[in-house]
Length: 319
Ligand SMILES: Nc1ncnc2c1ncn2[C@@H]1O[C@H](COP(=O)(O)OP(=O)(O)OP(=O)(O)O)[C@@H](O)[C@H]1O
Image (cartoon, rainbow, N blue to C red; front, side):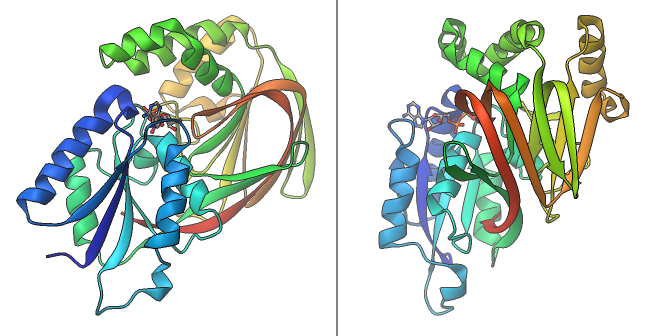
């Protein structure tokens, strides 16, 4: 018996097939323990948005409407950061509808950021034992030029990190590596390629009442928790439990210095570099006038200019 009515959204393709493996063990465990559930499988990019919107119409409800005499309908995502991103955005302002999560992507940065186990059965048992959701910070973004808005759970980057994700997704090697469950290696290959190709670009930043301009930005990432790129601690002190986000700007420097900085990043010492600028705030605006790739939670935004304002929101997760 459980106090929850479970609705799963499953991306079997996440993590080069990890999603399918995780779903198999989780659903088998539930059957063995006589716990009923409903499961919906995503068939294409964006499908998790549609499935969440359907469930919102029919079953899901805000935690404030929970009734102790009835099972609470809980949406649980099995997939990676991109699938979670779609679900959180489909729920939008309804941040009081909790989301459970069983991470099974390749990067799993959100799971790292909220210190959630990456063992599917442990994550499931945690969901079943929890009695109420807990709030975490997510970040709202509004891009003024194209009038687009959304939420991210991890980070939104303009420049290098976005270029790496776009290059990896476009590469033929990703498909081949995915066949051998080595999808993450395609990001490393793309990083080595793009690190040298990414040019500096001008940005303007408004943060904590000050306006700052950078002529040669290289990486410009706003983040909700420490990790990006599958466990790299770009903002080691960021916390999704605090009502603020962090902005990291790295300037374009020569190749030797970039390589040195990459080693500092691996040792979480990069914030000491004079080429790395670090801000913490609950509101940030970034203007980037030359077309650059963007990425939100690992989902690519094709090259464009950005005038983007960030603010923090509280959202409930069932973790
Ligand atoms: N059946 C499907 N076929 C192809 N793509 C899908 C399918 N279902 C979902 N997707 C898309 O797959 C993309 C990647 O999913 P997700 O981010 O969950 O996995 P991942 O990239 O392996 O994990 P992470 O982001 O944690 O590294 C998302 O954009 C999602 O919309």
